[in-house]
Amino acid sequence: MSLAKTRIAARLLVVAALAALTAGCFQPMYAERTDGTPGLREKLMGVDVPPVDKPNASREARVQVEIRNALKFKLYGNATGMPPTHKLVLRFGSSRSSLMLDPATALPSSENYGIDAQYNLIDLATNKSVMTGTTFARVSYDIPGQLQRFARARAFRDAEDRAAAEIAENIQTRLASFFVAGT
Image: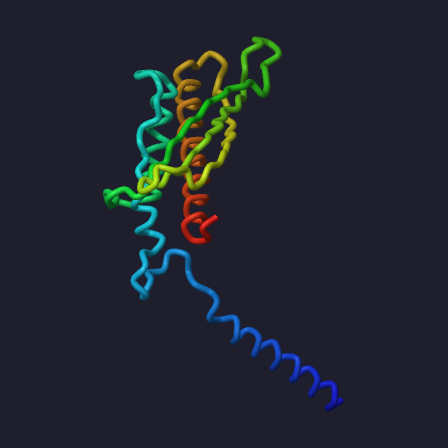
């Protein structure tokens, strides 16, 4: 019995030793650096997000403002940003499809709204693309009552806002990964 306890204790000691050796490898993503190199927050604050070229007063113009504002808030927080070191060029398209139709009226009772976005991060010092990617968001929304057009319009707008926030979250996560890992 004591031989089994000794083996268990030895295994636990080995596991604890390995954990102690790897404990110094962990570094929080948003931690401030003590070696003078800029941290992730400072790198994200150097990303300029210009407006997406969409026709004024269109639905897509409103969505691009939502995406841009959500992305800037995720990158800068409540700050205004730093002098830009990178520029993020966005392009996107949206889609809308009916999921369920009411058999009596043939009007949709549930719809999907989607955004497909492409982004390109350009280093301003070299004017070269350092990262490109695509992302998408699909959200569904219910139409409360078939003939309530204002409720339908509001549900559609809320779906646009949720999809825009999801696109911004996906892009911010990818940018953070790029600035931390370099790939």
